[in-house]
Length: 443
Image 1 (cartoon, helix red, strand yellow):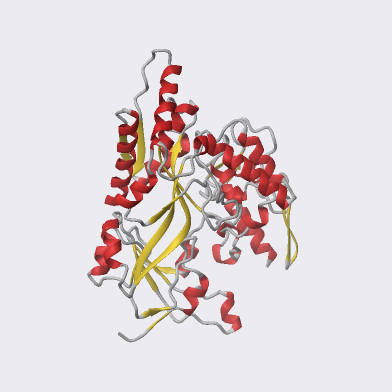
Image 2 (cartoon, rainbow, N blue to C red):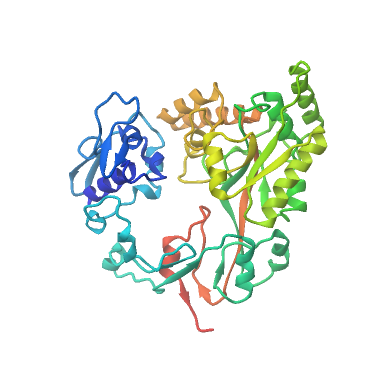
């Protein structure tokens, strides 16, 4: 029903729900204003400095169900990526009758899960799924998931026979010995890892300083020595397989090798130091969150390469995942681990979402010249012109290390040979076809 789609989108934008995914509906007229308002005990009031009237719903305004099968959506401004953005899960419909009158109610999820806790989750099929009326029935009636705070223990538990599936093999030193095992699987993800550089924080408000650290990194050496060839080093800020991937992307000064260029790195650092006019170089620390021994070794390796090439004493700031995300969002970092996974098939999802000065995801990103260019590309109706505009802005960001890509992620996992039809897609999801057709044979 069109009304269910309208309800679901409106629920995501509603400030009383306080969804972490509300930015994905911000393209819709008045959605950003709606979300920015405050909600106290179910009562919505204007945000600070808001001059427009209080918005209590988008339904009937920018979301109009003209009949049961037609939903009219009005955008805030032209958005050439919007149809692709609508493939993101926040646009999936939820029946209002399941949620009830309280829009913040999460109890409706109990129909799909059993015993959801901080360490485990049991999922069962949605009894209202549309496939049933078409005669399709999933074979497996329950999935039991266990959450781990340390990624290194997942594979250990799998090896001990505790689970049918281990979504990662860690540490990386265990991958090569497992490659010939019948339960081993590997795939390339639409996920990328970057050295996120805060363009607003000294010393990286200086282009020479950014280019120096980005060129000092030998991605190939880190992949071989630490990651054990489990990733694909690259210069493109969009992963291969996504629209907007630059096969001919180069780093600063046109460097094509993913080994970097340490000679050029030293020259850029010397230029930065000269620009200080005798003032001292700021203390520098790299931010990352630790979840596995391999991640720790990788980022410590990045720092070691930078220190060795540039003669610095960069340190590391290691946090938990929540603090790491918060610090990146508010700009409380100089540089550090940054990553993004594809949400929908459009360059805007990577470039404009992350690498603009007004990004709501990561602070300190983008440049004054590329941000307007990316926003203009977002609205360009001509597909060829739009692709070229993104490509130009993309390379411009790379030229001054406003973006510093490191590698495209790959995943190595194991699943028992008696589990059939199981597959993980490039977006790291277990797809619907797999969930429906998966079955277990006697073992």
